[in-house]
Image (cartoon, rainbow, N blue to C red; front, side, top):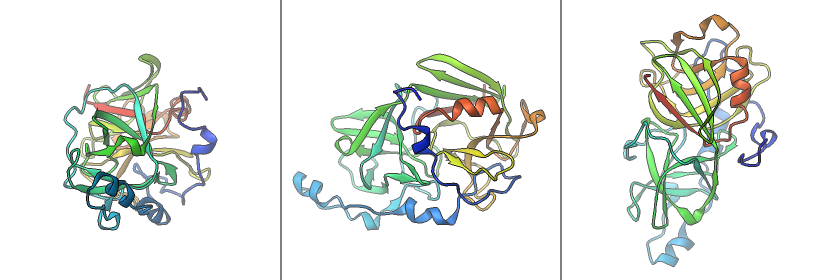
Length: 276
């Protein structure tokens, strides 16, 4: 992989989750992942003491994962804007704030769905970094302390045009490829706005797509699907006649060559879904 990638493909593709329903349009998140998603990690006591602030009790905070709802999370105010590709990885479990120096409303762990957590940066100021979060409601954001983050850059941007049913993959602004894809049916549309590549899951026994790329967004019409929390994903599909149609439960079904290209994209990469 190019040296701008966050991790090698071998490192990112961890052990397979239990088989997903072959008809599922959403990722069925296995129960065995919950512990990894919600682990508390180290406390913020040392850092808080250095600032003269009260320590943060991480055990009292809800984990920001694809399984959780964070009604207090600030909404993304620029859901159609591209970023410069900056992505961050929490070095340990960290509190998430609604604004710099406010009280935390959630926490985020270094791992999500057995992958390293990488979140896209949408704003930065005076030692603080604002990121997109993988929780409901869609477009949830939060602030993290920059000093507690590993920072890198993804050169990629994924654009999904739900109206024309096209997916574009860009690298440093240049088109890598464009494909006809299947998007959500009218009653279960693919949610629009900014999200990101949350994880990469391999299941060699899965018939419809051995590679699943969950995003940090969820169905707006289904609370759950196939045993999971209605997480939207990019994945393959064996019946090529679906491409160019609106037939899924919200996921984006992509051709095999598109999935191969997307498998090279680092976690945390921004995904923008629009109605074009």
